[in-house]
Image (cartoon, rainbow, N blue to C red; front, side, top):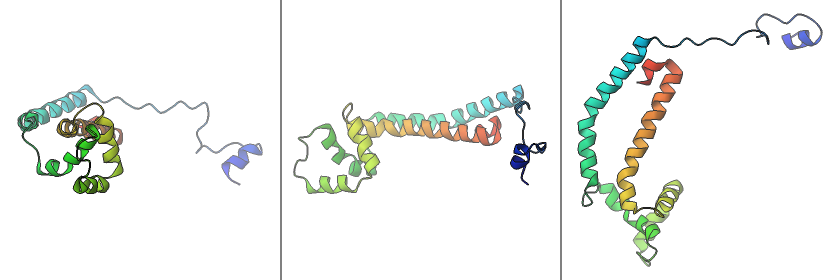
Length: 149
């Protein structure tokens, strides 16, 4: 007889099942040393990557500098920003038809507020920050604070 049927039949439940009176397990907090070491590792990574990202941001701020992929993929999205652009351009139609739906929806939504050329310059930084934050949270939940950084 399984433990649930024994409990229903009046038998004592087995000790392998948690009882309602048992307290929740206490998760120990990491020691202060682990928190400081995580902070030091984070600061080291920032110091290492900051000059590279600063140069990248300076280049991205220049309106005349585009990545080769952006030259090809961003200009058809200008149609979402201004309806009069490229009205009979078959190549723009082709590129827009080949883009993934989520990509089109994202740029169509953001084009209501900003030029797609500008969005293509700042969106990678936002997505990088979100990705790093999510990876750190996942690592912290799986292994602890030291794995988060």
